[in-house]
Structure formats: C-alpha cells, structure tokens
Amino acid sequence: MYRIFCILVVFSISFGGNALALSDPEQKVAEVIKDYVVAKQPEWSKDEVQITFKLAEKTFEGLKAYSDAAQIKVLEVYPEFKPVGSVVFPLLITDGEGSEKVLLRAKVEVMKKIAAAAATIKKGKVLETSDVKFEVRDVALLPPKYFVESVSLAGKEAKIGIPKNSTLFEWMVGEPPLVRRGDGVSVRVSEPGLMVRTRGEAMEDGYRDAEIKIKRADSKKMIVGKVISPSEVEVKL
Image 1 (cartoon, rainbow, N blue to C red):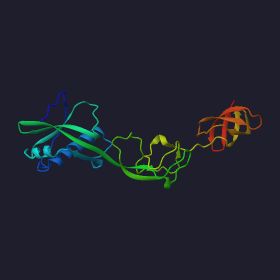
Image 2 (cartoon, rainbow, N blue to C red):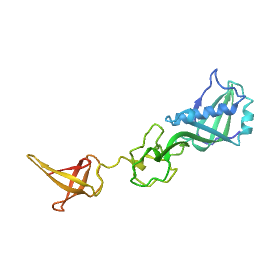
Image 3 (cartoon, rainbow, N blue to C red):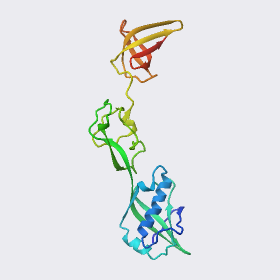
C-alpha cells in the first residue's frame, strides 16, 4: 500500500448492480479510468480510449480479494492533471468499512481516424482526394486541430510543405486565394458619381474582401484595392 503525500480531490465512479465482478479487476479498473479520462476530455468517447497497464499483475491479483460491491475511485492529485500518455493513477478501493490506496501505471491512448498526408505535399498545392489518407492514430497528446474522417480537405491549399505521413492540422491548409501575386486584374476605381476601369497587376495574394497592393498597368503606380472576385479589385477614392 502506498501513501499519497498531497491533498487528494476525489473523482468518484461508483458501480451499481450491473458492475463487473472483481474476478476481472483489470477490466473494472480500466472502465473506471476510461470514465475519468472522458470526464476530463468530453470530446473523446470511451470507445476511443485504450488503457494498457504496466507491471500491474500483482496489484490486480490482490484486488481479487475484494467483493463485487467494492467501489474504485481515481484520486485526483491536482486539477490540471492530464490522464494521457504514460500515467501513474492513484486509486482508492473501498469495500464496506475498509479502504486501500494503490498506484497503477498505465498508458492511455485515444484512437481516432484522422487525416494524414498520403504523399509529400508542396506548399501552395491545392489538395486532391488522393493527397489525403485517413488512419487511426493516437491523438491523446496531439493539439486538438487535426481533421477527422468526416471533413473533406479537397480544394484546400497547403500553406506549408507537408512531409509524407504527417498528421494534417488546421494551420497547415486553408482556402486558396481568389487572386494570386502576378495575376492581371480589372481595377474598378469608384467614387460617388464616377466609375473608371483600368488594368493592373496583383502584387500579393488576395482573398475575398481583403485588401491587396496593385500596380496599375497605365502608370505603374501602386494602389490598394479590395478583392471582390477572382479577376476584379475595387479601389475607392
């Protein structure tokens, strides 16, 4: 039995009449830990959480001495505790008036089908279906900016070079610009009661309603206009 030297906030999961018997304590403890993990991370489901115990055979053998009515609780050492990756879980087992604290080492994985690069993707490439594959991967330690299977990435543009097999995150892709640097555009110059059209060259990539620099074809003068279509920029005087 181990002593826990800090104030413990108890996260409790109790089992009723349908609880698993302690003839299989490993499965019961796994269910308790899964509930604890999902309570911490509601965006995950119990079906996605996988628990692998390490060097726990003697502990589970000892737990067989408890009755089916025993309750198991995860003791939370501090509120910011993240139960993912390789973790030591402090547990409280209560049976009648007696209780015992034990430590169990486990690996917590969260398996989701997420998007990855099927091949090396160059910066600026507009993605096709063949550029993306969906694989079941452990997301427990990943930032929550990955793409799941239900999201289509076709038509998105790579904002950076992406190596083959890399997990695809939101910051790696985006919408293609309506106007690209070097494109010829129609420049609509307007003010109340007057509208003039001329030609120009986009000096930077531009997205809808974003302002970009344009070089006028007739004077080489630099002006700033708002992108309103793939071939037209509006300048207001």
